[in-house]
Length: 234
Length: 92
Length: 109
Image (tube, rainbow over all chains, first blue to last red; front, side):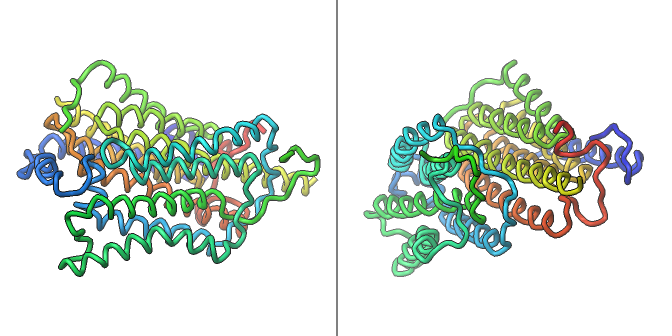
């Protein structure tokens, strides 16, 4: 990166960039060392309000209750990114698919149901210990990628109506529950006695849609040409 | 509220490994090697999150940061190679 | 120095390292890796500074959790666009930049 003399770029430019980036690192370090102590104590505030949030795990409380706005916008961003990918029309892959060996197929067969189980556990555990919709969705997506690599799942050339609705379901459900808060006076304000149930409902929707969207980031694209010599699914 | 662990030798070693793997990932001319080093970097990041008492991020980083991003990058590298090979065969 | 501050400083270093890679490497895949390293650095700064007094802070942790998911979506979108560029121009480099000799994906193929 820093050494070899570039064909189109002179050594001087390279070293200037390296110098500037070193300067940036130094300035960042100086700013961080110079930073005064924070005037508000967020961990204390979170702990004080945790009882009213409907869940017992502080990170889940922040994600789905105290800063629910960020999570709502985040799932919207994910949906937009996938729509952008589908709209960009991923180029047909010239590559032959990974030859799905029988070993990989057997592994995928054994692991996929377990991964769905783990996702369900993580979703449930999120209320009182590390876990939650994001991790559960990531595990679901990993299961999707594994099934794709083993040749059990087709790539998405053009998602059908059911798939499109499933992709948007998590966001739609979250938005609906957020709008429900308007009757309480503000967007995303949950009625206190049912906050826990509402958060679990939102998280279930999020897990489902997040898993699909994250897997879709990998699956989007035209069907891979099948390899002639088989090696695919038995 | 969780207290963080004390600062120790392990943190210095982890920091050096993180900087080293990131440097090698960015400096490697071979993109396949760069991608594999980036996955290593992601897994080391998961260790750093564990040191920072952030178990939620450990799960997300290992599954998404290293796993899914790695799969996406490897897929792109494979696509690039297959394409180049196809073009070379056409040229012959 | 507290553990949080140490990792925040490390994050600053990783951010600068990723930025250098992003600028210096012409190949788009390498640029995307650089962008991801920058993101990891920023996340470390957020969580590290949040816990520099020795107590883990759930607020930046939750923000970083969403950040990681958004980063992978951005990476996937960037890769899709890079593939489109590969189809259109035959190479994964931005117009005006050229691959250096030896900087190739199949140097050993």
